[in-house]
Length: 189
Image (cartoon, rainbow, N blue to C red):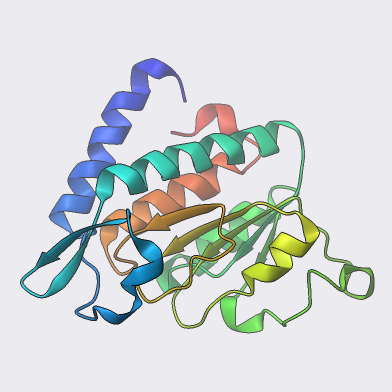
């Protein structure tokens, strides 16, 4: 993505996040101790994500994904929004990358890669129902990008992107990240 068309893209993501309430978390105040700096406070009893911090992290992650793609390094995508499953499968099949449904992930798959044959250079998760074993990434020294909400554990996540996972803005961000990981990265936005 060139600098000239990056700003309209950033603005469209921000608009979509605001319109679809991508900045709202849950009503729970319990799990916020380890996530200081990612939240602005509460609005009508809902946690409010710091969109500036989430977008900054997202654009760093996007740059990392692009560089891994250009270097032909393998990216493992674990989970995605349910409505995007076919799209993610198609995009990863066109590239050197792998997609695994979140509920198909087996604990130890990464650390026991000699048996599983799985040895990605970068992992991207879209948390929806359970936590990803991020300690495995730490042990293998594999960078981890995670689209997560306030119910998730951020320990060992290198690029935590806090967002309302059910928002249209989250889907837009994830879709763009997948496109950047494909073989025709120069033509995607």
